[in-house]
Amino acid sequence: MGMLRFVQSKKLVTCISEGHQYKAGIRITTMIKYLGIITAVFCLLAFSAARKITTGGDKINWKKVHVLVYTRNGIGYVHDNIASAAASIKQLGVRYGFTVDVSDNPADFNDANLKKCNVLIFDNTNNDVFDTDEQKLALMHYIEAGGGFVGLHSATGTERSWPWFKRMIGASFQRHAKHQPFKEIIIDDTNPSVSFLPHIWEQNDECYFFKEVNPDLHVLMVHDLTTLMDDKEKPDFYGASSPSAWCHEFDGGREWYTSLGHDSTTYFKPDFQKHILGGIQWAIGKNKPLDYSKAHAKTPDDPLPY
Image 1 (cartoon, rainbow, N blue to C red):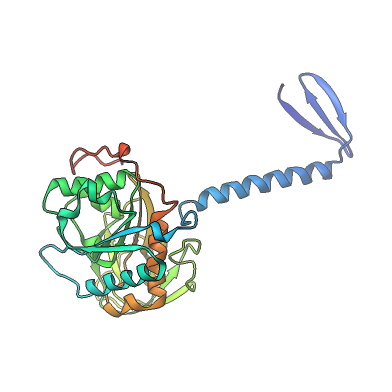
Image 2 (image 1 turned 120 degrees about the vertical axis):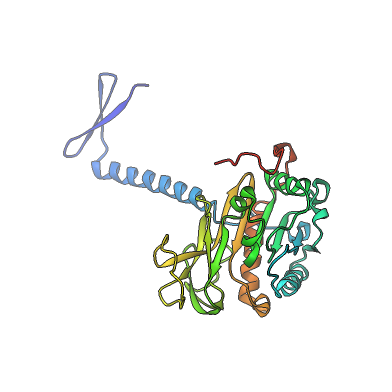
């Protein structure tokens, strides 16, 4: 069929196709109404596609979920909140029925072991947490196979000289302002990790700043810097705010991170537990089986996807 075009008269529409004219007894107002409906449908479809990065996927059968909480720290500062965070995640496991293993042994990072996991949680890890390239490759293979990853607080200080890890988790820790009350602003209320929170979430924590930020991040929540007390120059890359929690899909996997959680007591607050649970939910997504045929990394220093 040839191209169609519509020529308006006062009451009729003349449809011209391949040189032939056909008068259709359709009032222009009716045609506009139909076109409006079609436009609305297309907009809805586009909006639904845009929400895919933020939503947690289908309803999760938690009894089939296996989580590995990794707590290893290298030489340097070690948070005293690690045990509390692990205990909090175990509480969530008991409440919702998923399995939680806790380990600080880098030898657990091998293909056979990680194939059993739906989500890896880096619980306030910091500095170098792997002993061998084989362990790093196991993490890369897991992500490439479609694995889920959750990072808590100081996890962005992990493996600071490994470009792939920094790109995967989303950024690298730079510094933080002194511990104080400040405001978090929710900027995507469709993500399950923040959908239940008020638009302004009052916190008393460390305000983290980052460097080497992955440009593909989907930021969920930001620090409000307008009232933050800081004796150093605040980063102005984002103006009066700075990323605090985010998610993205990188190298085949799904990654979620929150910068909050310095205090041990924070992990037992109901809203923060729900924040973490929503991050786990988003990282699991549709809970598809891992596909190790997509695991292609040869060395930890393979070229980055971008």
